[in-house]
Image (cartoon, rainbow, N blue to C red; front, side, top):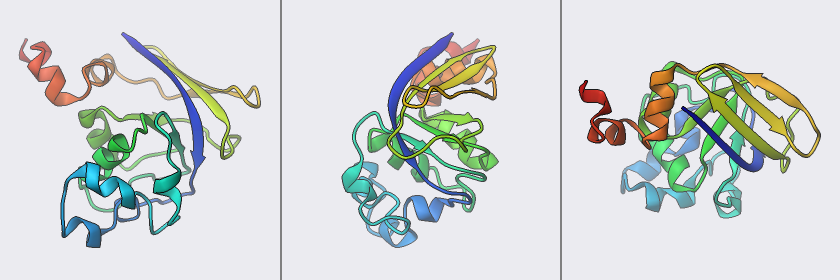
Length: 168
């Protein structure tokens, strides 16, 4: 049970709430995450959504995903092609929404990672490690319980249950 992937760092700050990830005004028209991707983080950086490339990784500071517990914040990030969010800490509800939808939340020290760095993330049941390939920096992330890794490997909670893993 493990996963590994690489991507470009997209650097953000602290206390990024779910309404910054996708503005409430945008959710009035639709909850279709494929439509909402064009507005991803528009209140933080209006050019962000247009600059995202599949495989990018969000790198943030403390308290990522604070605010309301709306699931669409995690699904819009995934729909944009972003596989993981690395942050010093997460709001509890965002963390669970991320896992349940197949978005990988990695809690780690992000202070040495800068915009554009190439990162490699490896996780097993025992440990998570982030390597900044650009600078050579290696940081340990918080280990995830085996159940969370299994859910992520299945693409989220729905995939996990459909595979019968949740019906033991």
